[in-house]
Image (cartoon, rainbow, N blue to C red; front, top):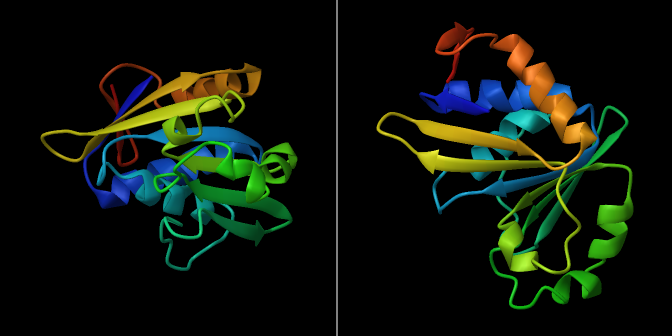
Length: 165
């Protein structure tokens, strides 16, 4: 599934729809170059659970935990990870084993250590805005994509402020 996100408002709105579809569970890989919008998408996902504060990528802390409306959400940024084994020392196994929503930026840095994602989102800069390419890695991921697709039924159709392509 591909979605055109024409501006920051649509990017956040799509994140909110994604957050609602995830229902507080799963592992989501967020991939894309620097500036592609991984943290902006995370902000939208967190808003689906009532978070209204600023969202910064946890580049130096590696993980930012949130407890929102009874849901545990972990935002990981593995950009500065030198070795995937560092995840073991920082308690990554406990975070990933938790029945929570884990949003993982730069998952390639944890390759070989991270479990497979339920949902993989590849973001890329487009002429206007961003394009998000979603692919499922589990039954949970397939259900999320189906739910999102039902919002934007039909190619090139506007669904609120999000263009489904």
